[in-house]
Image (cartoon, rainbow, N blue to C red; front, top):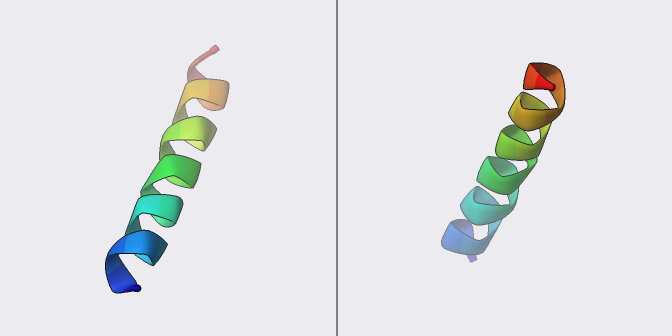
Length: 22
């Protein structure tokens, strides 16, 4: 469960980072 939450958080962080980079 923790791993799933971490993956979701990480995915969201990466998406935000990419959006900011563009």
